[in-house]
Length: 422
Ligand SMILES: *Cc1c(COP(=O)(O)O)cnc(C)c1O
Image 1 (cartoon, helix red, strand yellow):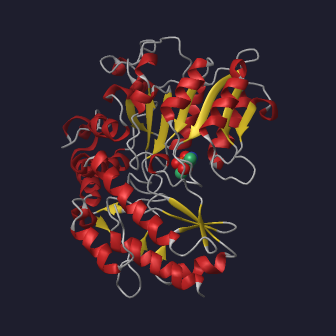
Image 2 (spheres, protein in one colour):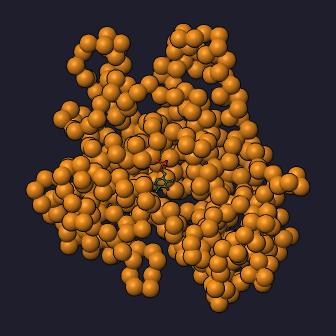
Image 3 (cartoon, rainbow, N blue to C red):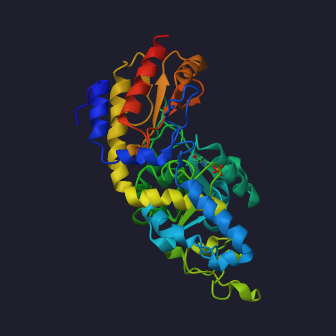
């Protein structure tokens, strides 16, 4: 589509936008003057759906009125509560319902997955990771290596962008996997990369990893709810994500896990186990040996926090109605519009670090501002924008299809151009 650089054009796109009604279903944070911020940080913390309060209140009320009986008789009984989320969650990430469960938080789940899928043996003991992986992912991988009595300096293979480049090239990922084939136990990449916004081709990476005999897992913190991930078709072994970024389930909210169905019948898979992963029909006999549920639910440990799950539930209802592919369609256009406007500032002023190919990115653009420092970001903030600053000179902005408008994007562009002019 041909974009035009004007507020009128942005407003036209908004009035033609079939997703525009969803903005109204979210609380937009307000400035002191009462007008909403231009909120472009949905990749860090998604906004609160207006319905979430009611979902949480329902559980507060049922707990008050029923006590323990709420496990069976609450409006949404707590015993199977996580099951109410599964189908919608599976649709968002493109998996079969039995491959997905909402539980714990992201880094916890990453550890649980590495217990199952990082199984160093002899010289096949390495983990492939991005050199600029999210710190938590790196700490998790390094500590898993140490847990096995190995040395992260020897067992971590870092994918480094080429000299002068910020994003990784798929051909280089392929080459690294092929060159180290018989030494790799696990390929574990962030997808989408939190810093550059680069989205990796999970299907190809999975093929390369499997061809070399390694397991492969993805941290989809920045992908879930942002891009239709098609996890099952990618055939990767596992994926983890949080639900508080594009999935709007509240600060520190519960995460999600996917394990490909080919692992569900493996009774010998190493796994940290707990009673919530045990056969539901005999769980309360409390005496039987562990009998794993033949789905990803086998990785559950504890009975889950219902209040936190209620927030996931309310958000997923919105995704169910809006549809991840519809949202993706808008996201491509919205991000394209942002790119068009920001690029018009000139490449002596800005450099967009995120790939320009829509297939290699989601809703985020990481904008490097030449000769800028934090003062520039402060100027942007003081003009009513909530975005994210990464030292030394990158602003990360994520126009989110569910609640951001084309006008938001245009307003951000105006604010940025004023700020770079000083
Ligand atoms: C947001 C994010 C995390 C956060 O982990 P928590 O365990 O939820 O605190 C981890 N990894 C990546 C790639 C992220 O984007």
